[in-house]
Image (cartoon, rainbow, N blue to C red; front, side):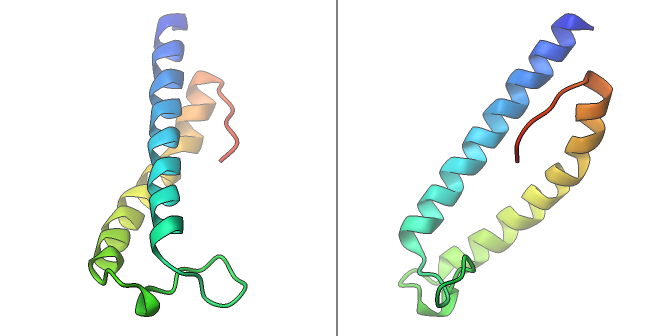
Length: 80
């Protein structure tokens, strides 16, 4: 299981890095509502980003829902 654990760990790290890069692009492209962290897609110059975020969020939510089970199975810990 040691090799599997390292493979899973590496793949999760890659997923989390890609997720972070996606949010960096959104943070740079979409203004926030007031002083919050919520995206203000109505004030965004690229309305297609709202649709893109909606699709990404569904994917991201599904993955994050599954991760705790993977962490437990492979005795991993990540700060998400």
